[in-house]
Length: 174
Ligand SMILES: [Cu+2]
Image 1 (cartoon, helix red, strand yellow):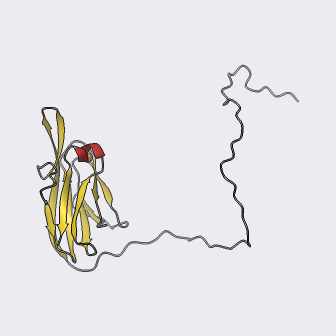
Image 2 (tube, rainbow, N blue to C red):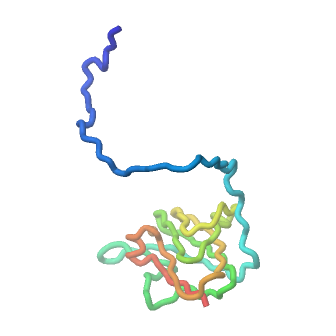
Image 3 (cartoon, rainbow, N blue to C red):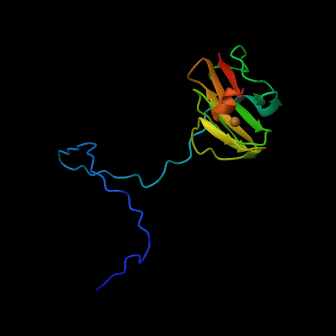
């Protein structure tokens, strides 16, 4: 039998190259039977306790000579200004509102949170998060237990260019 291989098609195979050993793997011992989980983890438990305080943070943008600056509550980041004071052992809900015309992935250091509402509509938390994308025009509500670590940390847009251009703030847990 004759096979026509591509009749006239150009060939774009990679050039031949020598095999390069990267690692040797040696396996020893008897095999171990492992059962894979049959389901993903279920809904996560909400943090216990009442919401001590609700706040809103506004993500903003402004144009200045030299280009755009990115703001939280109308201010650029300053290492000398604590934007949010919280109390250790309490739970807060923060609604992050994005009034700009682009998405901003909001990232909070140290304190994991759950997403409990989007645009004011309650949602079931899917897990513990440290970053949530806030779409343009959207508001997302986070439930944050401040329970393990006292002291200052930061929240910021995770587009590092935006962070560097001002979209970051300090939260102090005391
Ligand atoms: Cu951003």
